[in-house]
Length: 276
Image 1 (spheres, helix red, strand yellow):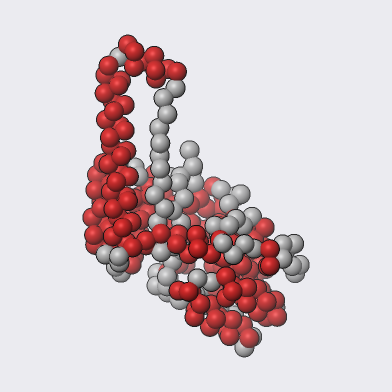
Image 2 (cartoon, one colour; image 1 turned 120 degrees about the vertical axis):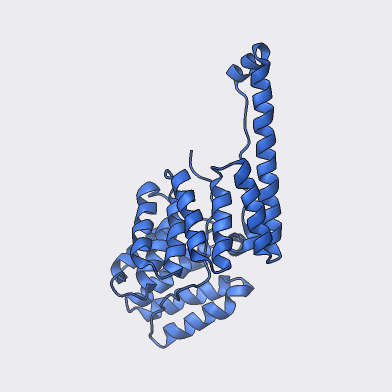
């Protein structure tokens, strides 16, 4: 088992703020879907006033959608998940295909303990964004947290099949293979291979999770010395809300024990825009 070529000290500390916010209700990113008018559009505007009216209506709907998404994020930041759900529902009434609205609302249903409604929203996100791994990866996170490991396993691999160049997909699959409570799905070697690839593809936004996955994979493979080395870096990078959890995991590795995920645990839900 070779050590990844990038040293843990090379991972930027500034990434923690963005990655931590991305998985908190108040940190949901509002995806701006701006439109542009090409030469053909300009010609149509000159000869077809109806085109201009349609363009205006589309722009108005987009502005309303983004307003409700912003309002939903504000409710989330205050811990008012019912209020946030109402805002995201308004956004979906205007733009029924808004993947980000389904993702955000699905996360809030999960936070309220309604797995069925949460899963239904993530199913809709997948249906509207089959060309991006993000939707599958998010649904897998919900399924993992609820103990639906067979479905989660399939979705993690689907995410990779759709987007094989995304580091987060490798990181999450690696973490799942290293920490799943059901031994049927654990595989230390595959966990390490995926976590390593995820680390090589890590960006500032997901570096914290890349190191976290790698530490878990080392532990599952029985290399607790390296698991401790990498987990110590995780503790150093962790936002205040994660310090206690990550320190406890480091103590576990010091006892030569691997980590096992907890059913209905906090999620890292991604809010990337769907690929075109």
